Image (tube, rainbow, N blue to C red; front, side, top):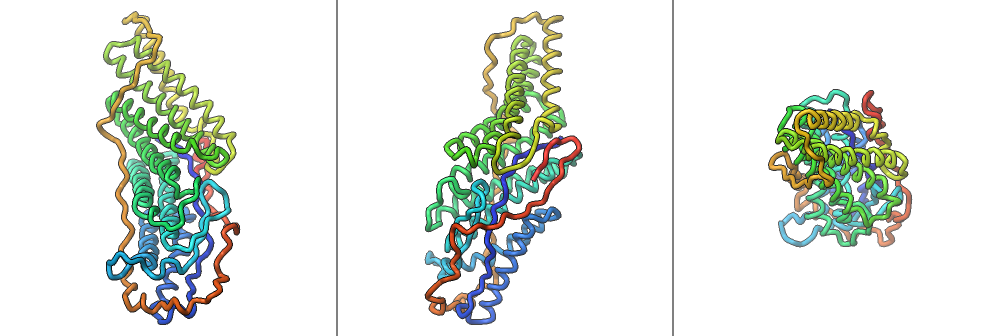
Length: 411
């Protein structure tokens, strides 16, 4: 089963040379700086390389982050911060707020910003795989795993590293709790979509599918509520996506709940459940149109033309017609005025983020290497410090053409 996921753009960043002339006083210190520059450049290239896979990305991220840790961690395991933490200025844009970057002279800001992009890459890799016309079981597992890894990275940044920033996070920026929480919840919801597709394919119990769909709809609703206080200029398109997925999976939940009721000879209630499913599907269809018309950061798509959307519409129609036929021939039950209350709890298939940790300090960082950085040699007038309002060029992300049956373009 193909899937469609909304994606915001990657964060962009200004180049960093790590050239500390005069400050790095030995060949070993200079080599660490060169390795930092090269590994950072390589990692940024991989973000937009459509042939990059998780193994390639992990190797590149482990190398860069292990080197960057030398600007953050104390080598003697003390609580004292590293003397190099504030030596370099870093500039990063945000996924929602265009190309005007935030700048901080803090290696922790670089760690969390680059880590954020790594998490985004995993979501985009999952999106590219999930949009394939004939996705295999192994690819579906990769989609599921990638989304859980991304959720784990976002969660680790929020809990362990963003609180260490000296400069408070600006409201509406990527590192703010509202946005991070929404990304985490969205990753969990999308991973559960893969679980639901698998359960449907294997013809699992309709009660389990209904419960998973209901839990997934609640995830999407929670993510949307988390973004509700953000400026709609930036978050409007993203929220349309979360709204339409909420309605879509509520339609799924009522559809499969209707099948459960029919199997229990509650045909009147089953018809009412299917009618409620039709209502939510119609809402989702309207939101698809609104999503396509809403300007803002994110994927270009026509989700109502996507196979995953069309399949549900047919399923609801056929199931409702079956219930109505059987009620007319066998049951003759009254259809309730009120829709059944969904009090469904899934005992299986719920997604939790995969725990994430940054790699250990690179072996090139020794007490001697750190001592070879002489901060007294820094120029007094730091003219190289970039202007915070200077524009940073966006990353050129791969243009993924839509599959024949998808009706959408996945970035």
